[in-house]
Image 1: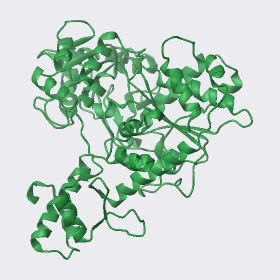
Image 2: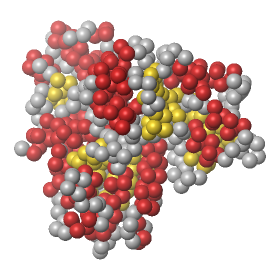
Image 3: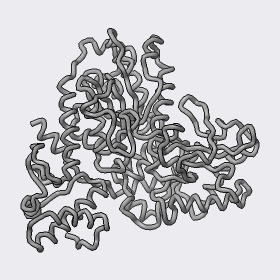
Image 4: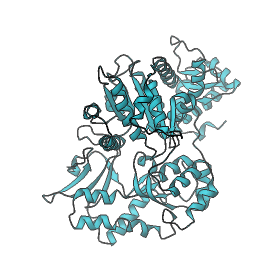
Length: 546
């Protein structure tokens, strides 16, 4: 076990706070402090619990800080489950509430007898398995469904057909439907996709009209009341919806998923959409991946890709399979789809913004300017250091200044792209929204953001919530986005943040082309590393079902 001094000050303070109330020997207290500091550090790293050995379990039980009883009347700060996982009691409760609610929802499922007839109207009959049709069948026959699959596998197209099917089945009273996503940007993307998919459906207009017009964030859906961690809707005040669809579910942590599910009516349906291969949530847990493993009968994976070029699909598969040799070979084939950039990569990155700045010079339509900017995005693994977000934003600004495209004498220079980093419901601007600093029709500097209906809204820079320059952004921030081309930049040295999940998430933001800035050694080490988080969700589902 690590020495106490190797942990952060917060971890040490956490350990000392709890240990102070125990009546064990000083030697045992020192051991307990290290163990509790390790638990605190584990949560910071995204784990929901810590695996114990028998000696550690005995020490914790003797300290009267932990219990193995599931009885809610026995409230101690720590809990040890039957698999020797140590939890903060709060996270144990999150898991138990999530499991209990999903089990209840499963028992209330009601299969439909003439479903194949209804499905034929939206899905062609085929001798091969149509995974989109299977997803629809699962969603109609069960009250809880997970539809997973990589970008471009048709998750949004499928969900629109499912919503129409369910409205057809519920002829007496249209379902009250809510659509939500973890971030404002992801919500806007889902709203755009559903609007486009709805327009192509061959069904009566009155059925299309029953689908929601807007997509919200999960926080707004539940009725967030910051700075309080509690929501308006909870297990005592349930959401009024009959069907809830959540996109980008891989981004949802254990606490939020538990709060969401416990606020849903037992008779309601819940459909989660997401890519289980993507990065897990920033906070604790790997909920989507755990649920797909624990509940295979509720999970359908869409396997056919419609968006990617074959080279990108092969690249993503090689990364997922940890085949670093094959993946690196694909970067060296000098094709126009996947390319490894040499030492002069900064010139290439700056050149990709030439059309964008030329359009600004000519005062082109904002929609055209925004589309030009959105074709290319630099994605970084980290925020500081060589080839980081701050490093590349700084160096690109200097090159663009030298080319006379921008004037760095002002923070709000014309052409500056920014990303909102905190939510502001009043302005309807949310973490992850991207805007461009331009002149309006009165020659005043405004920052323009796209709206879900295709329009654009300009704001005075002084009114904006906190934001940052975004010629480059982190791969984490890019989740839910897509671009024609991305350039993924990895650091010079191997770091714990570098994993195949991070790289997969970055390269699958691209629809047409991928550029890479890295070395073979760093690339290989990244592909061979995986996100490993300790959670007890899968095992607890086994206990609940048995």
